[in-house]
Length: 316
Image (cartoon, rainbow, N blue to C red; front, top):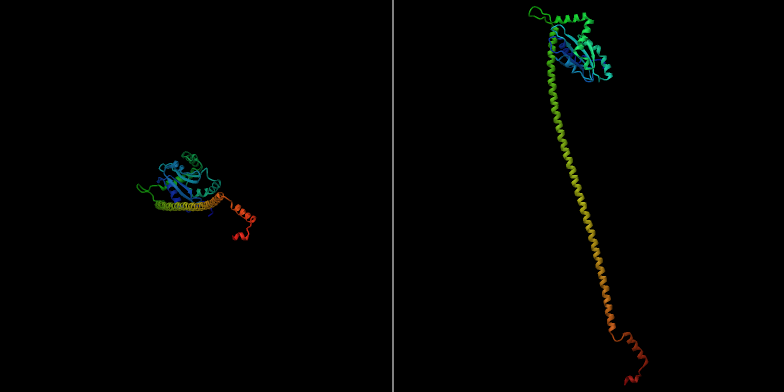
């Protein structure tokens, strides 16, 4: 099967069951909505209900191609008519429009029981009045076909005797299959909901675990940064203390050096002062003598050379 061809086989059971619900005059279901499964061309039953055309129109999506099967009129009066709506929303891409247009022949063949096929892209295109008008046009153009379809529908409901209704084995099997399908669908839906709940619980648990782990990582990161900051502060304090100690050592050395120089200077001054005092005292002593020693020696030397004594005089 080509990827562009509509697939009516994958979900054929649900498609057939939904169609039989619409065709069955005893069924309260009067519309069914069919849509493609994701981005594939597999057609499946999307929804169904008993609210008529108005309810069906509310299910059409502006961005999706869909198909609506609905019945108009009443089976009790023999005026029950089936309409197939080919819905292509206004926001559907052009390439998808063309692709779905190629599906129409297969769709019409599958839903051949429909009396009329209507194309629509806005809610205004699909009203019960317009559907009835299209049905009236089709009935006027092909009365014999309508008569045959009405006859076949009536035959299914013929009575045999007073309290006996003719049994249609195929119809009964379809009804049984329909009931079985819906029972299975309900079970599958319950299982799906349970699975979604389980996954939701697991997801919440996973998110909670991730949140706790993230909080722990954040707390560890904050502690690490705080410890780094404290270590940095401690290192700065240690360096400041070392610098202060080094500065004190330099200042003490400088002070001791200045003190030593001052003491040496004081001792030198003291020595100079003592020398000056001694020189002054010597000068005072010299100035206090009656004769200068040099002058005395000079005079003594001069007198001995001017009056020499004889040897005789020295002995007398």
